[in-house]
Length: 331
Image (cartoon, rainbow, N blue to C red; front, side, top):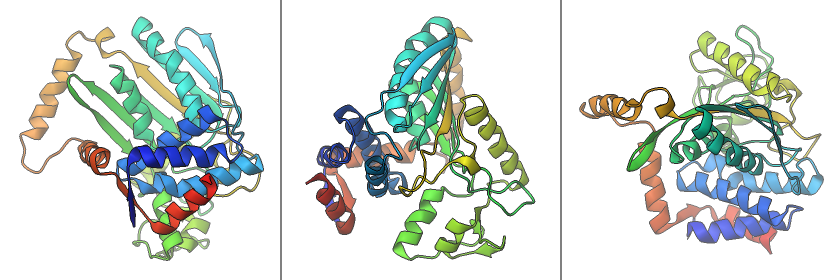
């Protein structure tokens, strides 16, 4: 393992993208997102994705030079066309329009279509919370979960996230995949040749498996079983039917450079809590304090923020082989 500062890694990653048919602004946006995942202790959404992203840009599966387009079909709707490009520049464009609009009218939806993997869902809503807004995110992904009772994957692991702003301190951030674990964790296990716990996934025959590679070819098990499967469908409708994007089984993989752009979708809600209740912030602190008064309880997201502070001061460790690959692509 090699230790590098966040700044060093971000510069190196941006250079790798810029050398992989990606514009400088887009390269910086994507690099920033991947390194932020590393800082938060989420390597499955971090630099382990860089090689696949770069290969997709080189192959044209992702348009690294795409310029997202935004429109306002209704006062409370910001529509973003990611234009077959990376999701992160599309989110940059959508939030730039949505944040002032939400402050003005109270509630805005950001619909992102023809998009790509949007990384750590919690980071997106955290940006809204940092602007004083409550944020909710829904995103779909390539097929990984079968409808309950079935064996063939139709829907993605479809993350949802929520963030609540807090004055003078880090926001509350809730971020979860609707599979029992994020698919990226199984991808990392497959790359390392490690087994996965039973109960995470099914193989192609619909049987439980601990083989990570078999799991990637099979189906993920939704959290909460049938209830989780219903939430997966809800997210699919919000993120796809409302954004003109591909359903999970129509989307190509995030992990290779084969096929057409995945064209998945994301839906975000951003609203000003003070528009609904002048004392919303104070009322929220009541429940936070009640939770914190119990031994062993921590608010969602707190561990991430501690890891982030440590990473900012000490850097993060990156596997030698991965660092060498990034350096090769950046050369």
